[in-house]
Amino acid sequence: MSTSRGAVRGRLRAGATVLAVLALALLVPLLGGSVVRASPAPNLPKATGGGLGAVVLWNGKNVSSAGSPSAAFSLSKGQTAAVTFSYDALSTVGAVGNATLTLTYLGIVLTTSRASAHALGPSGSAQINWSFGPLYNALQGVFQLTASLLNPNGSSLWSESFYVFAKAPYLLESGAVIVLLILVVAELYWATSAIRDARRNRPSGPAPAAPPAPAATAGGPSAAGGGQDASASATGASAPSAAEAPSPSGGPPSPPSSGGGSS
Amino acid sequence: MSYASSGAGSGAVLGIVLVFLLQQFGILALTGILWSAIYFAVAAIAGGLLFGFLARAAGRPRPGPT
Image 1 (cartoon, rainbow over the protein chains, first blue to last red):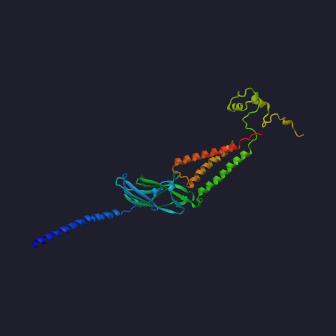
Image 2: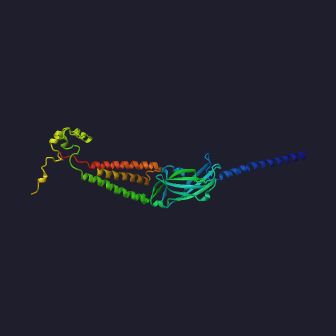
């Protein structure tokens, strides 16, 4: 009996040991898997149906949050922004060759910055330390930046646009603003001076729409044709009376002044 | 007529400059070249018409003495 009990205990121990080993063998990969899943960088995207997933961070913030001009990232003079590209490309897409940042103003490309070549690979990250540079002395305002990932041939694999508001101190220390303000003052001066001169030199008297008498005496006010004559005959329906009564502006019956010498 | 044309010229330049200034101050955010061209053209035409008519009205003869 004792031998049978010992054999049973031995079998139970062996079974328990096998179970423990199996449990460990099952649990270790699961534990390991969970550790592996938690380890990737939280910003690393997953390749999607398009074959490439990418996230661009502007000083740690996702650029998709600045997808409209009203939500543009603000950048002051002398500041540098760390723009980080994280990408994951499927093998069908191929390797990513370059990460670029393109600055456009009024639809015109001003600058293009490229990440260094060590960023090559199917997945990984690249960083561009982007600043406005000397353009800050000339321009400010809302600019569109386009972050792109290019393959080694130079064709675009992925791109996303966002906005940056480059702000000069007091909004005035920018060459373009100063030039534009001077232009506004100059043009306003010219426009107002043109209006003032026009007002000063405008002729006094009725509008020259009513032609003087000779047309009426020539016979038939509308005979000469033309819009002006028609309007004149329409407005001054009493053309003959106008011929008789001198208009105040024309001063027709003035005596011949040629002979009116002072002596 | 020369007053009206000079006023219209100044108004057109003022319209263009105004769009530039609004873009510089971040009030306008023109990003596409087509929309930028449309905004500039509309501003130039509006400014030219406004100041041209102002100068033309200012240069119109006064009503005669009654």
